[in-house]
Image 1 (tube, rainbow, N blue to C red):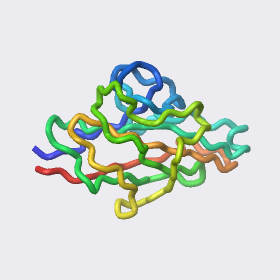
Image 2: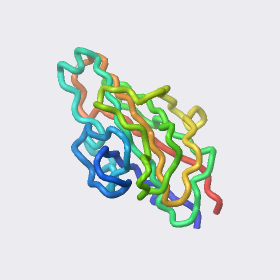
Image 3: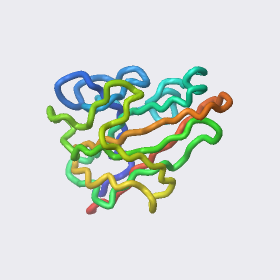
Image 4: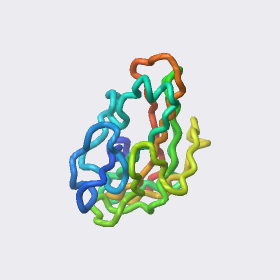
Length: 181
């Protein structure tokens, strides 16, 4: 059976634990890389990856970074290249977002090897990163193949722009690839 949307999961990250998929998600704004957490990001919920932008952070045009993972939960099939990520929707008038696929290779969901780069704080950019904001599948960033039960990290950069307050500000990130069957 082909990979379907229900096989693709989006999860935050943790710098705790000794392997992927072994630690529960932390508070919003604490996905600083290293390992995948053991629960999905709640779709369409506020503060599911980033915490709120405060008035002082907005006035300073603060830039924050968070690491999320794409998890191919299919038992046997690889999410094949071209597998790409893009911003499929973004709320206008608030922060702007950009993405960058982590430079770490895809690894098994429960791997003890580090599954993504780690940053010291939410305002520290990942090493050697190059963010962009593609808005279509055709301009999406290459994630690479994600084998069955493997994960791939994607970094999200959020830039405040000293704008008026926006309720429910956010972005939708989409990942899509081919499947063998």
